[in-house]
Image (tube, rainbow, N blue to C red; front, side):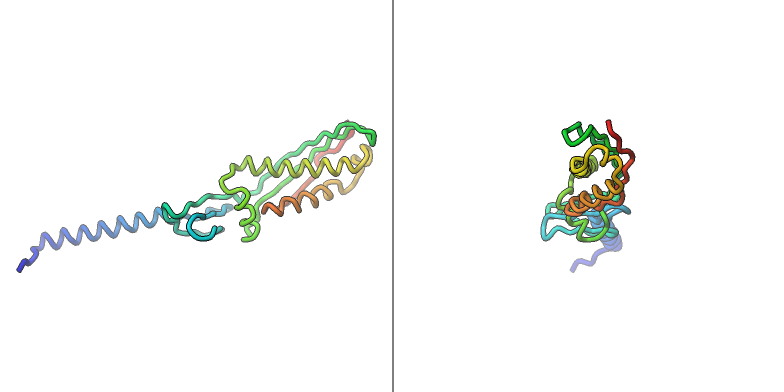
Length: 182
């Protein structure tokens, strides 16, 4: 009968400790956390999961994780509406501040639409929507009425907020910087 010597037992113990530490290290590299102002979108095997303010294990070959920024974005939008029979040319500048709110429903909408997109692509989408709503509001008024209209920013903001909410983005503020007849 073979009886292991002390050197075999020590070597086996060292190998066991090394194996445990290697497994713990490997597991720690699979755990991903969402940083502040960030959502972690995990997809692949199983349903898509969105994690805000926490973390999860992401298993290679079966799952992939992308990050989605929840930080507020500030955009300046300028629209120049040419002269028409209804009135003179009008130039409007607004500042929009938007963010993806941390609610599960809104983050899930934004994740469906923007996961993997650069922040510039998200900003361009917001800019396009605000420009379109601002143009609609300016066309609905004559040139002088557009300049004198109180609540133009509120009207544009209300319309743009609905469109943005469908994409998981909240319009925090829309402020008219200047509206003038060109």
